[in-house]
Length: 190
Image (tube, rainbow, N blue to C red):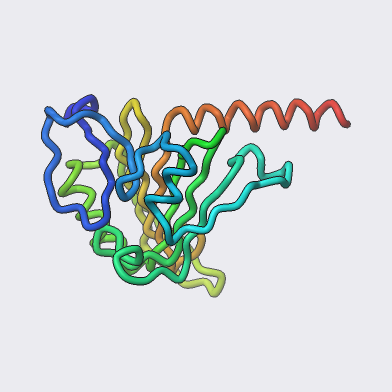
């Protein structure tokens, strides 16, 4: 699949195929990446949004919106049960969305992404070990284009949780710029 024809229009319960004629659009449930915080709050009313004032979190976002204990349609993403959603904003614009769900539903969600976007740009498999010493299969699949990326991981923060990250290229670059500035500032304080 040509990466330029890779259209990223993430909607819950994806069911249609992407054609080469569609423009590249990175979005989450109809909220296009780059949308304003106010529009996002209107489009995703189940999310609670906060201003980040702690300096250690500033490189990651200026504001975040969080949704947990979701019900109804908000609780389903590509057929998987969503445990939580975290949307991050720089300068009032959406740049990243992170979702957690049961790792047992990762294959089903990965199949929905493949149906919509074709084979991933990257796919790796590995084994992870729990704190108790049990070994589990893991995989990471990524769909990447010039606008950003979608990453699905079977075992994310722990062996029972999978994750999806929708990230814009501009957001990744801004985060890197802010982290480098924070590191330089901290180095001057040594």
